[in-house]
Length: 111
Image 1 (cartoon, one colour):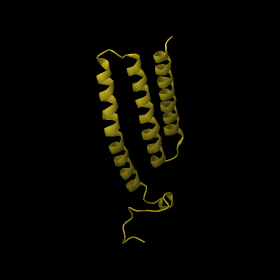
Image 2 (cartoon, rainbow, N blue to C red):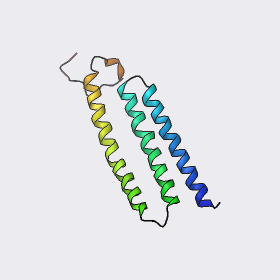
Image 3 (cartoon, rainbow, N blue to C red):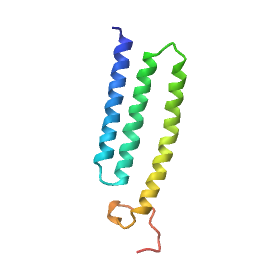
Image 4 (cartoon, rainbow, N blue to C red):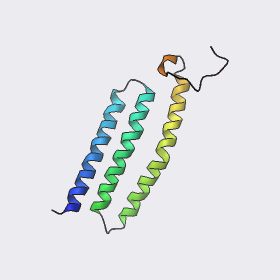
């Protein structure tokens, strides 16, 4: 076993662990805003680690560019999706004003 295989295995296992914690967080967290956090940050970082490990394992093949494109598209689309979900969740949960300490999106005319 050489060093590249060990490094690829560590990256894939740590990425899989992060993706597992994201999945558990999505199931366990109580509301949409906290689920959104679990769905974006550890999931994306876990996917990037898995893709990095797979690209180390597949070095020398043409499939590395496909893995790189998957990683770039994930990094570009995950924040946009999280933003849209967060805005929608905020609009739907307006009756729970105690959810946020500072409500920057509150209308000024509503008391």
